[in-house]
Length: 258
Image (cartoon, rainbow, N blue to C red; front, side):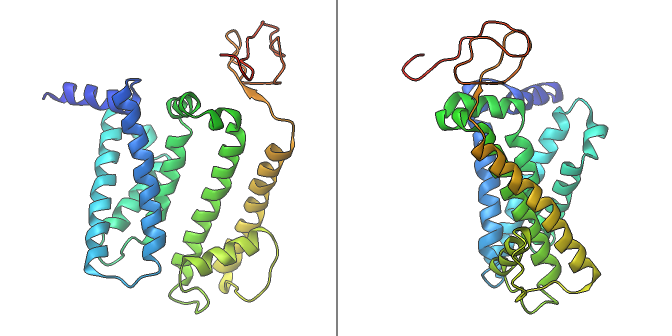
């Protein structure tokens, strides 16, 4: 297959609308979630040859995905230095470095969020899952908060596990992250040093903000996701007849109607 043919094929998988492309993108999401679960589970077990092999296999698969996306990117140099891509490069190196183990591999989750929030993936989820259509904002706010907690837990774990006797696994790091985020502050686990205090401050400030955002979408009146054909406004009142932005008549499906 020629280089042009290969790039065209990859673009179809990553950007196309065929059923095969949709299945491929769902597969990427499942792989990302499985990778995150692997990182969490292996934090509770001693390192072994099998885990090291799994690290390398995951690293190679992530590298292949990264190279494929780089080849089809129309603005390669600009997106190469995007923070999410930089984090993914760090995750790849971490998985492939035998000494480091999976280390900073948890940063892979940032790529998962980026994939989840792309236009095509969101459109696919709205199309296939009624629950997602009805609760899109709640799902996205929950994902944002969950990812923040996971990344902060990973940072706490990786920076403290060798020097802080109170942080032995992800459960300990998660416990500290949640108590800091909720400003409960039991004080049984603390992060010593300047870096530890700064990390605690980041968790409290940004974590509370994301938590309040989730509370906002949970308790405010629900809106319906329906794209106005004229101005593109997505969120409308459930009983809206006209778009509140441009006044165009809209036809929002209600219960029992197609």
